[in-house]
Image (cartoon, rainbow, N blue to C red; front, side, top):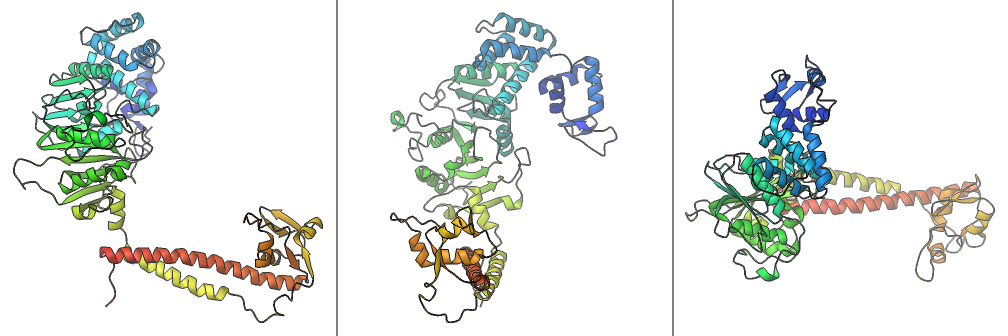
Length: 551
């Protein structure tokens, strides 16, 4: 719920929040706004995203009993879930056919009755849109890849090029048509789609008809194995292909002419869909393809990525925010391709735009900030890996090499000065073996109750024994050999270790020296890590031109 503290009418809510309050879809709320003159007027927001006063909305729902009664839309959805279960797509297709007045499978009696009752008060297009919204919402909550998520649709629409009114748009894996119908919003736009699931294809076609989209043709079938539109050349191809599918027909399609950029491996089904989409573009045509992040760097796809870059086909790669596609564990990418036009050299490009939105929220702004975008020369991408991951290239470009180098160097210099001060002041002792005369075992000290164990290391349990002195001698080379088994396994507890007998004041003197050596060793490890980082940033900075030797 949106709380606007400065609003004179109190907290404000969106249409989606009203739908949740009333237990209906957003389409139903939109319908209420049109049908009921007394529906609250917007109290804020913009024309496309109005906000309403919560108190006024609650009063209106109470008067209409919308908040207490189960709406007809909810009752229909519940009846369909009971009748169709996991086959809800088949139910959606059957209901859409009935609303369109076209022949289809007979509806169960309960569903048919509710559809007829709802059709008397609601427009068929509002009913089917409400059902679509509920289906997509349930798929999103379940993390299903059965439909393209709304956030992905929003991203594709944002990065799609402007199209003429009579453009042709194609989606070769269109599902229920959410992507192609959203991107091609003009009623005159010719839309074509293919979907392997027959129920999804039938529902998409019926829904398009109810939306008044007469120039939409969607057929059932496997696009890769049985292309239903072999001669189609579109102005824009959009696609959210099946992810991680290895049985896409490689063996039977090895000699297919669509593999213009190279035959995809069995594990690179997404690159087969990418080339299928590209094959269906006309001169100057665009492709917007949803791709898993791993497709940007996997070794098996290197050759095809190289051809995309070398020929100037790949124009942009966008790393979308995490959570954009709920069915993908990693952020998904949006690859934007363009087929060269008829005029040679007229629209060639020598860079690929890389956009990294992974630091944004899934519902945040899709327009990149300057530090989130870079135009990378083709030659920089054409290395041994052809890694197209935006973050890999943007980190190097927007990294503050001089600042990082200076800070790391100062930190290392300070650490080196402190390391020298950590070393204990040691003088000549009695010679090797001078402390071996009077010793006692750690096991005897433990039995006497002078030693305890907190984790793997022995610690003092008495004021007559110094812990640093104890652990320092246990770690000595002689005792380390005693604590090492025949298989080479070292155990620090050192119950068989022996330590010299001396008074508590001498123990503390030795313990202080051992403690200083331990701190020195820890400092050395940190200095080693700092040195590696410093050398790495210096080498990268010199190689990229971000750093230069002082004259």
